[in-house]
Length: 378
Image (tube, rainbow, N blue to C red; front, side, top):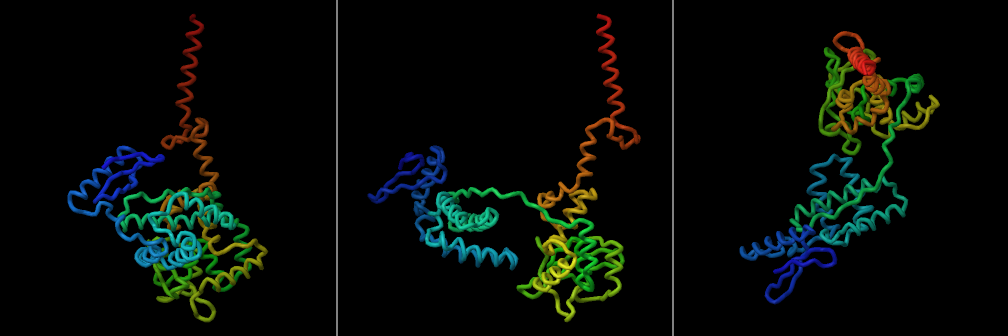
C-alpha cells in the first residue's frame, strides 16, 4: 500500500489479488491518508472487507430518501413537518438527485442544484429549506451506511433578515371593534396570550386554572389528523391570563371540551379561521395579515413595554432565545436605559438613589486638580 496525492486529493493505492485499487482518503491531508491506510491494513489483517461499506450496494438518492422518510422523518417529525419534507423530496430533490448514488453526490452537484432552483425563480429562503432536507438526508445516509467519505459540504444561500409584522395598538382596537362573537374572543385571546393558531383551536376548558388565573398550553389541534396533538416543540407552557381575558372566558366557563367552537358546534380549522379573520380585517380597513401576526403582536408589544427577553421566550414557547431576539429591536426604551448606563450623569445607583457617577466625577475632578497643582508647582 501507499498514499499518493493526485490532482489535489490524497488517495490510498494498493493491490489485492493482482487487482490495483485506489480509495480516496476521507481526510484530504497526508496525515489523514496515512491514518486511513493503517485502517485498511488493519481490516486486511482481520479478514474484513477492505472497503467496508463501499463494497456494499450503495442505494440511489431516491431509494434511500424513501427509507429515510419512513425510518427517520415519520418517527421524529410532526405531521405538518412530514408533509413539508415529503413535498420537498418528491417535487424537488428526487427529480434532481434521484438517480445518483448517495455517496456520489458532491458539493459541485449541490451547487448545480442551487443554480437550477434559483433560475426557476425559487427564493433563497425556500431554497435554504430544501437544502436543509437534503443535508439531513445525506448526513443520515453516511451514518447509516457507514460511508468513509464525509458528507458533501452545503454552501447555504444568504437570506434576507426576518421581518416581524405586528399590529399597532390602534390597529388592534380597530380589529376588535369590527369583530364579534367567538371570533372576537379568539382574536382577543391571541393578542393577550400569544397562542398559535393550532393552540387556540385546541384549547380545552380543563387547561384553564381559574383559581390561579393560569392557562396551560397542552395541545394543538391538527387539521390533517382532525384531533389534538402536542404543541410545538412538545413542551407544554403556562401563561398567566389578565383580568380582561379571565372575565371574558369565565362568563361561559365549562368543565370540559373545546374553549372555542364554531356556530355549528364544530372545532375550527384553518380555512374557517382564515375566512373569519379576512372578513373582520376587511371591515376594519386593515392591510392583509394572518393569525400568526396576532402572535407576533403579543411578542412585539411585550418587548416595547420593556419585558425581559427571557420572559418573552417562556411566554411564547420558543425553543431558544435566538428566535425571541427578533423582537429585541421593538424595545427602544430598554435599549435606551442600557445606553444611559454609560453616562455617569444618568446612571442611578440602585443602593443610594443618587447618580452612581458622582463618585467617579469627584475622583476625576480630584485628579484634574492634582495635575493642575503639579503644573503650577513646576
